[in-house]
Length: 542
Image (cartoon, rainbow, N blue to C red; front, side):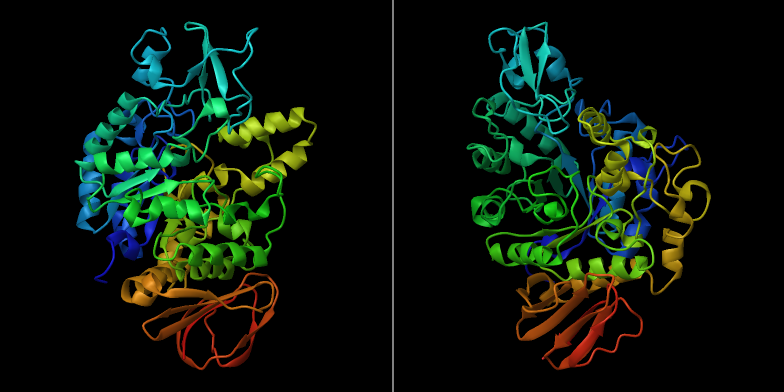
């Protein structure tokens, strides 16, 4: 692969450090644990690690509440460990992508400690403060993502501060020039350590204008990003990906068009909302419509053209496990896990694997609120209980969509606690680790891991996968997702049955080569094909 940027040619892997590998028996994953597993990641074939936050934090929102950007949370290790991780990863051609959280800090950050002391403090204006309305009422009706008002009163200054997330996560005031330049200095601190770039948490919120009730995609957002680009990563061989829940293809082009000097790509989440009620929250469930999935993913494949770049993902630390969510984590576990891998990794863009996805890790259903760790799920549970929902209804939603599903410890082998820790794990280990683990996957040449490994190799060795045009095959059965990738006269056909029932597919082309599939006995020929449950294959056609 000669053309393009390195991040257009690789597959990324997200590590949630708390749950990946514990090295010292305290039940919490850490940086030395990650270092000990780099050979495994090299074997998988990834080119970069998106590392969820390891900065100093009181851990109100699992590290997304940072109290010191230039220190490491002691549970995770030391700055020397971090330097070693960057160096050891580099030896294996793996770059470390730091998770950058700059919409807000922790309320324990030294800036906020000073800001809340008095209105005259120079740091007061680092955050967003407003006077109450008249008789001690909140400034306006902005809501926190975690439920309740986004405003909290601070008696010492007689004002309310804004927090779009937990009240321990006060929002930074990006309109303050000093704030922005402090952040750029901090980013350069990490760039100078040799990292490969940044994943930018809720970056579409930094242009907020709370008085106008604007949170996402505010008028100054792109001005700030262009300034950031120029002051930090611009002109360097670094990857940046923005978390942008509200992005449309037109907005995504604004972020990722190289001519605009903003970001490499964004995470867009349109497909992620397809199994929730249109006017509801993520907890209001509905079954996935495969025709809607085809429409949304195809739109993102074609709409960005050469002006933008796609990120491709099913899972992350905030989302349930795809094999449980839209696949079948029972009878067709392996087939559906491989099908989702093939369907996604043959598309154009940079694919992201979330730890454990490559071995088919599943959701972990719970039966009581006492088993929940995630702040978002706990707050929703109590809010919905008050609103008159039954416990059963609420737990059904949490078992489908709760964030703890993604955060159960990585399943390495069949020893106690899945080889994650010799101590007591911070979050329950899924009991199915005895069946689904790295050790078993590596021993089986037809495993889910082997499928991911092969898909990564196909991307590394075929320009078509990276650069080829995309075209949806129209007029298939509702649950059959088929598309072509074409490049310089070569054409591949990708077919996936996104259902637990058989479906028929009409293959019009002559087949030259079977490239990959998820059933061992596939013999793909021209004409009518009986697709088995969750069957998927890639063939070269003419």
